[in-house]
Amino acid sequence: MKITFEQIGEQRILVKSGDKVIGHIFSPAGTGEDMPSAIQVCGFDDAFDLWGCGIFYDDKGNPKKDIALHYNQNSNKNTLHTANSCDRCYYPKNNCKCSELRIKNRKDLILDALEEFN
Picture (cartoon, rainbow, N blue to C red):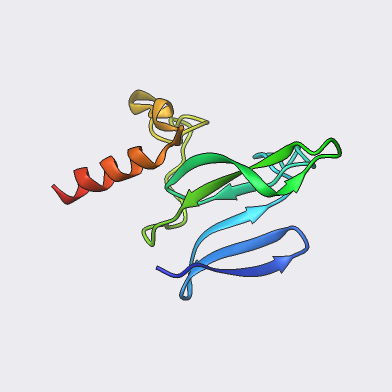
């Protein structure tokens, strides 16, 4: 799947697969957009492999970080959030899946792919 980007404002970018919007990137981050020095990336399936970034450094020569985000074409607009949904994972409160919200390593992604294949 090829991912493209469409800038829709100074601080908003749509993440697309063909004509379908599968995510977006915006700043300020946070549900209330109250974190002005951060970006929020929505719609991805997994975050994996937190690395040191070889391109950006601070003023002391220390490398910054980068992360890979995996998208899938199965993203759709969420219309299911209700008062009974968890405020972090958005599953129903009686089926909360917050423990699944974690950064994975490459091995985890391979194991997940094998589970889907079987």
